[in-house]
Image (cartoon, rainbow over all chains, first blue to last red):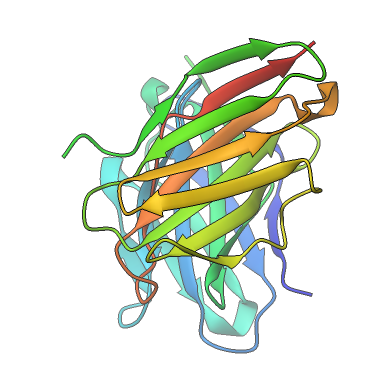
Length: 111
Length: 114
């Protein structure tokens, strides 16, 4: 079955620390991969996407993600967390004509 | 462009009443998606349209739910009759193409069924 797994429903980091949000997917073919962010009471906003080409993808707000086919992973990172990064993050994978979303990871940033 | 527009932003209704949620996609986008978000089930795709035609409605929970897209700039999601378990945030999203598949989401409608 097609699935997207985000390890950790809640992640807490200190301001200025590395952010690492994990995403693994089940697919035997090169996928299209996405990270979305959702701030409270808002819709989802695209952070970055991987379709083809370079496996290290840079997005908005200093985030980046690396597609690793051998690990079927697409982890999201940011070198230095900012208070404004506190939100819920969703990994998504295109299967056929649908996007399948992970369960989401809530990022908390401590001052 | 104003982005995806949804109305109303909040809806409170009583069990058994009909509820209609509205969506205006981004102009020129060929794909429109309806999602439901709950704490228990996360983000679920209910139905999607391509060029105003419903392509996949396998996510629609039951016959009480229906969706239409009469033209390229308007879609509705209707629940009749509504039940308390329908309480959720409903998102509409649109996409220019399926190739790169970037979906733009509206702000959502928070539905509460009492």
